[in-house]
Image 1 (spheres, rainbow, N blue to C red):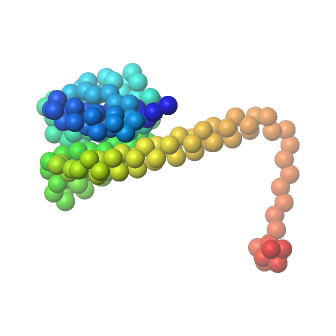
Image 2 (tube, rainbow, N blue to C red):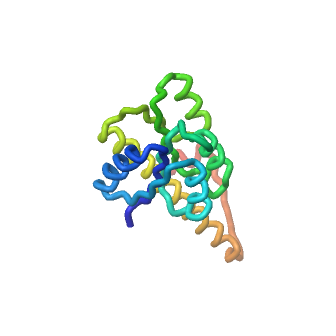
Image 3 (cartoon, rainbow, N blue to C red):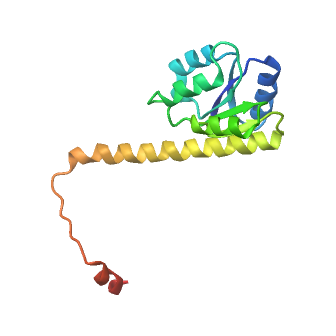
Length: 162
């Protein structure tokens, strides 16, 4: 099943370009033109996405406000958010990272850079999902545990056993 990405930008041309690049590499994309529309989409389908590409500067709810909401929502807090903006100052990048952005892409960016960053974000999401699944399996097994026995060895003795 392809990874599903949420694309958020108030410029339709940017959404079309992002969608074209990402779809050509096998990603399933959903595009919205505002922070409010993105929040509604995430509220209804948030757990179906593997990453978000989010424009920083939009009318209404801007990218930072949406990012804050995402990071404050337990079901979404680990979802990688790639901020994209024309403002590439060090302060702006620091603010984005401090707010929880996975990566900060400065416009204009190349197709190769976009694909590399998205691949890293999706890989990060896959690892998170796998660890979450393993933790759930372990927690599900605990109620079935009837008895356990543990032994401890001194670290010096363990070295001799190797």
